[in-house]
Amino acid sequence: MVISYRNSHGKSQIKKSKNIYKTMVSREIFLLLSLILLNLANTSQSYEPKVQAFLHPIYKDKASNLYSLPLSIGTDLPSQNFLIDLNGAAPLLLNCATAAKSPSHRSIKCGSTTCKFANPSFSCPNNTTKKPTCGNYLSTSLTNRPVNARFLRDAFYLLYTPNGVYHMDSEKISTLTLTCTDDATALKSIPSAFNGSIGLANTHISIPSQLVSMYKFPPKMSLCLPSTEGMESYSGDLWIGGGPYYYMPFSKDVTTIFASTPLISSNSGEYLIDVKSIQIGGKNIPILHGTTKISTLAPYTVLHTSIYKALLAVFTGSAKMVKAPAVKPFGACFRSNGGRGVPVIELVLRGGARWKIYGSNSLVKVNQNVVCLGFVDGGVSPKSPIVIGGFQMENNLLEFDVKASKFSFSSSLLLHNTSCSISRFFGM
Image (cartoon, rainbow, N blue to C red):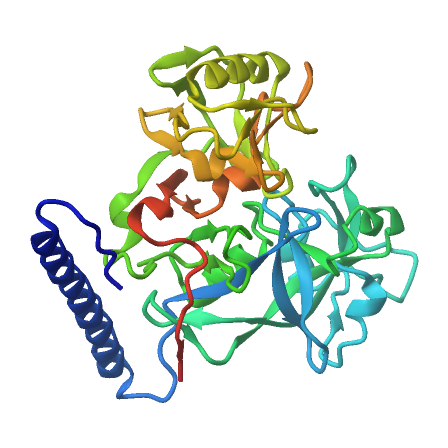
């Protein structure tokens, strides 16, 4: 579609727009055909293409503003929604009675090779002939204490991609070491929209770690969180195994626009980075010393009170927008039709990389006429002075390279006329 408008050079403008449109369409068709032909060439010798990486959909729950993976665990059981706990050490937080309903479910006994792998410090009692189930106390982001989890083996289903462009139309089945719990308090901490949680922390028993080892992938995991704003029918993506990452109509592998910073080592497997400063329009916002955590369980970025107040002051002073009464939990709100001067928030990271947060990731639409700055006050004694939340990550591709201890990010894909919520084709 060409949008025309009147001016002294109306005809030449329309003609120019048509030529640009034809060029864009031709380039996208050529790219798509090239990728299809490349895939046919790669798959002509076998019925099942090689797995380049696992590529599974992520969905956003509107009520909780949290994110989930639809997963099939075990045989003959329906798919369930698992809350994504990026820093959780338990591969799964699932009711053990539910897990045992799967015909392919197998408990892991103490003393077995699998138990020694999952928990090397677990010892069998000497005064009994019946070996107990192998277990461990594992941390989650949902509870203030470690959860008593039991290890099990069962089938795990994930979609995959042969080329970074589309999904295959069937899931890959892998038998993995998983966890369940009888801890009712821990299970109650999971919002009712979800059937359990999946932990993606950097540990040897995490599901990404097991799959990387099993399929000899590069030890990389990537998230592209979806936004519900105008994208209700599409999902985001969980990648396990690295790129290339294609998000049409952007014609390049997204790694070509990555910026990177070191991941900070953590004994618990949490994903931490070092934010050196925050800038808005060249103005520095003072921050406290301490590592910054990346979290999928914080709907919005949480800041130490001193950082939060300084951010509000600089942002509201720079924004060319009409102010509106604050709407909890936010401290600064604006009329959505009151101007277009939304300042860019820049997180300056170790090594000099800048994670740029544009209006689509800084302003939350709270009603038809009001948007609010999507950062919240974390008080004066939080564990981390900055916790980057889900809203600020939406439509950004984030890669966690655990071997290189490197965190890479695209900043907003919307700047490249694409998003995390593209519609992908299914291969055969």
